Length: 321
Image 1: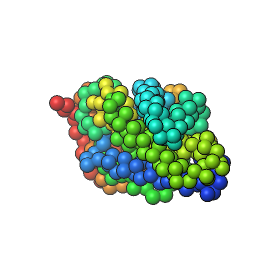
Image 2 (image 1 turned 180 degrees about the horizontal axis):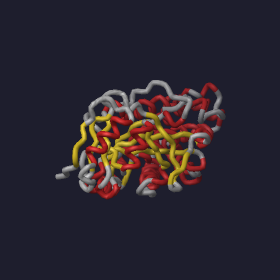
Image 3 (image 1 turned 90 degrees about the horizontal axis):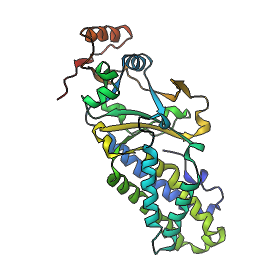
Image 4 (image 1 turned 120 degrees about the vertical axis):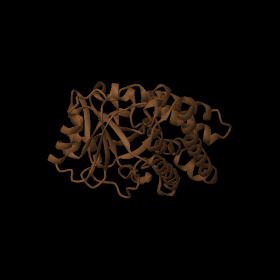
C-alpha cells in the first residue's frame, strides 16, 4: 500500500534496526492484500445516487471520493478507534515487557495525535445489496434516482505499483459491522505487531538498548498506526448500518499529496478517481429507482448512447423484495 517502512517511520533508527519496522511493514502489506482479495466481489457492486451523480460519473468516468469527515455517519472513524483503544489497553497489561510497552506507546500516539493533522482519507461507497429500499431512500434521491452496477473486475486489488498521483491509488475494503467484528480485527493486527516487536526486541537487546527502547518502540508503533490501524478504522462501522453491505474504495495519504487534487461540492471536500467505465462490460446494469418517472429508462438509454457507451448495459426498474 505504501513505500517501505524504514524510509517513512524509522529515520531515527540506525540501519541495523531498520529490519524491525520493515518486518511489520511486510506483514502489514500481506494482511492488506488479503483484505483486498477478500473484498473482491463475485457479482456487481452498486452505487446509489441521484440523476446528477449518475450523469457525472458516466460522462467523466470518474468517481467522486469524499473526505471521511463528510460521510453519513461522521463518528464512524472515532467509533472504530475507540475499540482499538480498548484493545491496546488489554495488550498493555501483557506480562511481556516489549508487548506491553509497544501497546502503551501506540495508545499514547493515538491519544496525543490527530490523524487529520497528518493524513487525509477519501472514500467511495458501493453496496453488495442490489436493490435496497433503505439505500434508495437515503442515497437514491428518495427512490427517484439510480443504482449503478459496477463490474467486479473494477474492484480487484491487483495493482502492483503506486501512482505518483495520490487520487489514483484506491484500495478496496469490505466494511465490518459491529464492535465484535471490529474488535477481532484490531486484536489480530495489534497482537501480531506486538509479537513482532517483542520477538525482535528479545533477539537484539543490545541494539535496542543502544538506540533507547522508547525510540525503537515508537518506530514500531508508528508503522502499525500509519497503515493497518487506520485501514481498520476506515473499514469499520456501527452494527446498525449492516444492511448497507458496503464495500469501499479508500484513498489515503499525507495531506501534502492532495494539495493540487482537492475539490469542493456543497461544502464537502472530494478528490476524483478515474475508472475506465466506457471499456466493454465495466458497467453491468443500471437500476432505475422505484419512484422515477415512467420515461426514465428511455431517457437513460438515449443518454448512454449520446455519451459513447457502445456496449449493452442492462437497464431495469427497481423491484425490491
